[in-house]
Length: 134
Length: 246
Ligand code: SF4
Ligand code: FES
Image 1 (cartoon, rainbow over the protein chains, first blue to last red):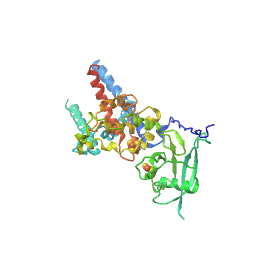
Image 2: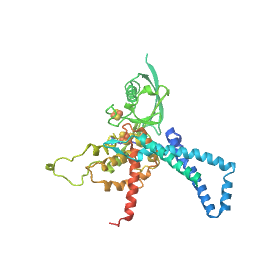
Image 3: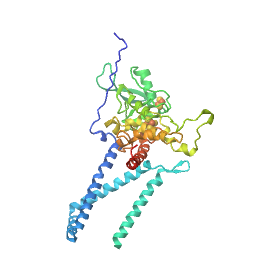
Image 4: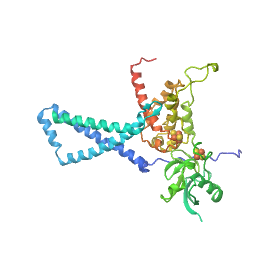
């Protein structure tokens, strides 16, 4: 008999369905991913508006009217918060997907994050101006 | 009398246990004591049957990785004093790896993955010794230096839920190492390594949780390497669409 027989019996821990509640980092990640549902739903609503617009002024007015219901307003408020959270988390992750060098020095993260906020502000102002002037 | 700190350790002894269980130890607390030193105290004074890994005791060999209160940490770089307010210290073997014994895990899958990416420079063309060394500028070094700091501790794998859910995922450290060699100006095997990147088990298995970079004790930022290569992989895909089959 081989007396040096192995006693190995590696124990594999199962991944629980609730793994994302294990620490706040995972929960934050799930929240960030979860907010995309609102981004998606809002896109669908806008697309519906576009479709109604192509069907004539009356159809479009109906769509606008539907958006005045308390439920629609509540949804928009929640969706706004979700979208802002989504944007904030992605903005702070963006420096990981770009590597800009100044000479041999890597650009720090802060200016990259700031540039996105400035970009967002600029686009918002332009859209607002077009909406007011048009 | 020194203050006492209670340390909980997840025990598993394959020859007698069917599953892990928790054991508590009372360890005298000193301000400069690391988790690793606390384990040494336990082994020397309280329980010689406890198994754990270490070598350098200075955050460079990567052997002493374990879960400290649920987060992957190097035992030698983590101090009892930082857990006084938490009131307890719970030590477990690194998550997402099979437990071999007590705090020792089986890392062979991780090692195989590191090996798979060919972690060495494969020059474009062999140079004769007489032609001198391969020259590199500080700027060329800066392109990959951060990713060359990895000590293969596996903390990032313990932090990655995708690796837990999908064990075939190449994972953070291996992809960071792959990036390190690909971006080295002296290397010529990028096209070959990109085949691994482009696979389902390559960068596309990453859902950008980002905890790997958070726990890395060496600031390697594997999440960055993976995101950068998602862009590269997408570029590869588009270029391949227009290129005739060869
Ligand atoms: S990337 Fe960081 S956490 Fe991952 S193995 Fe290397 S040093 Fe450890
Ligand atoms: S003992 Fe070497 S890294 Fe901790």
